[in-house]
Length: 313
Image (cartoon, rainbow, N blue to C red; front, side, top):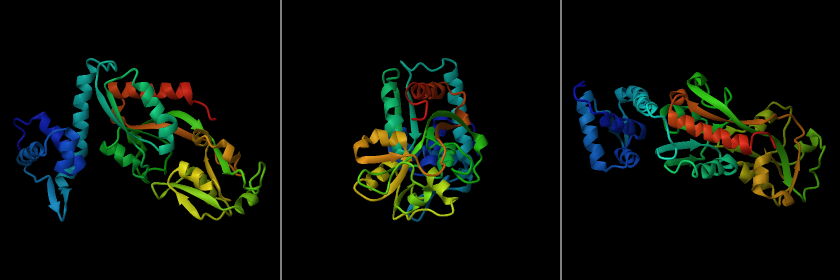
């Protein structure tokens, strides 16, 4: 390895290459040309005496050494940025920053988009991207820096089984309660119905990302029996759509039902079994705990939630 004359900009390119595992995608991420990133990769290969990226079939894969570099390089760049920014803090009126957030499509509708729309009044230079594909590898994506912050349930065993929650920070934003819904024409759905009554009606299950079981479904899995589930959908909004005009039920957060503005087509009642509140939290890697821009961004989201969505509906 040769460390003399190592350019910090090469480490920025290295971080993009290790994250994207593609010269083309790294160039897009850095907003530079592909040839420029190819030149940077060649310099990095000489610098570290390692190929870093190797072609395997039709894709590029990290060498074992590059895999070991990925997290330390990301942490080093973050420490440098934090050191520089901490000298002047973060002024949302003039400073620029980009954030990539992860949340479900329903949370994006009832909270994410409204909060970011409000943010534009205070931080014209802040750019945000919302990703709504929620999958069990959430903690890995936070660890690897693919996303900066997510809004989800923070609970052991839900994300990345076996993952170390000690590496992440979280803050509660707002809560919601679950309700049982069905089409208004469904005579089998009524307030005060028993669990046995509920089990006699076909049920629409919500399973995020294809295999992430929702809180109501986890509660149902511990019951001695459950209703037939002919349809599984990846979002609560699709569960609402599925029950309209049908004889099926679904269990969804109350705020999502209200946001759908379909009250006149739905019967909305309390579920006939205990589920508990849905607590939505901000989750981020601890590397951002003292980052001035990240602190400002989290404070904005927390303030918006406290003003608009603090208590369960």
